Structure formats: C-alpha cells, structure tokens
Length: 65
Image 1 (cartoon, rainbow, N blue to C red):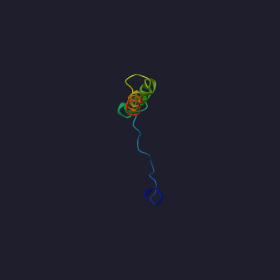
Image 2: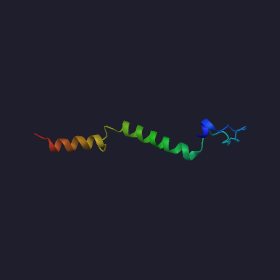
Image 3: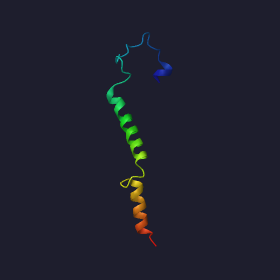
Image 4: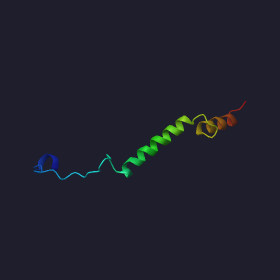
C-alpha cells in the first residue's frame, strides 16, 4: 500500500557503516556453517560412518540372498 499510494520520503535515512566488513557476523555465520557442512558431507560420502553406507548396510541385511 505504502509503496504505491504514499509519497516517498524526501531524504533517505542514514545507512549504517560496518567499516571494512560487508555485514554483521551473525548474518554471515549460518550460510558459512551450512556451506561447510554440505561440503564435508559430500566429501565424506564414501566414509564408513556416512548415512549412505548405513543405507547400504541396512538394505544388505534386509534384502540379502
């Protein structure tokens, strides 16, 4: 509603300066943790403790000849 029908402000509010950093650490940490865990799980997919190996183990027990 406000974007279409109200008049825009004459001046923009002052922007917050982070110095050399682009963003706050609290906003950057979750994507970094997610990226690290995704890479780690992908690189360790063939490890004996990976979920893929557990799935192979369970299916070999269930569907063994």
